[in-house]
Length: 188
Image (cartoon, rainbow, N blue to C red; front, side):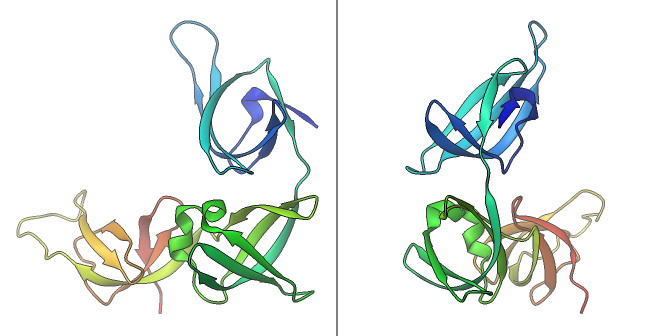
């Protein structure tokens, strides 16, 4: 199915010049002169290389039909991550490059959405947020207000995030996986 350049969004799987890409992010740019265009950051499904392209609204790309399945994360060995289909108990192993940086947030038994084209896995999407525990947080600087100041903290998976000054070590927080950002304190 053809899709116009201005309608391409993050998560789409498109075919351009015979190559299949997963759109990582998009940004509609409206320059002072000339027409608007969609700046697309994408990853080649086969090679894993990242590239970017500009699509004007009159240009088209082939939007591929993608099958989605909910799979459960089991374990990883090196850069190979294994997931299981809950219905057929079939296991699927993918390379970390297919998951990207969100792989840092995978925990045992986490449910993810995996995209398939013709039975081959092409993308893995984690939930939007997850709950993690702060293991290390800088001390609050005296006189710092909570209005706009954040301090660095380290999560139990080693990822660094910026948190409000009232958050300390041992606190459970909700983290946006894609942005690696603090959302709120977790409710117990």
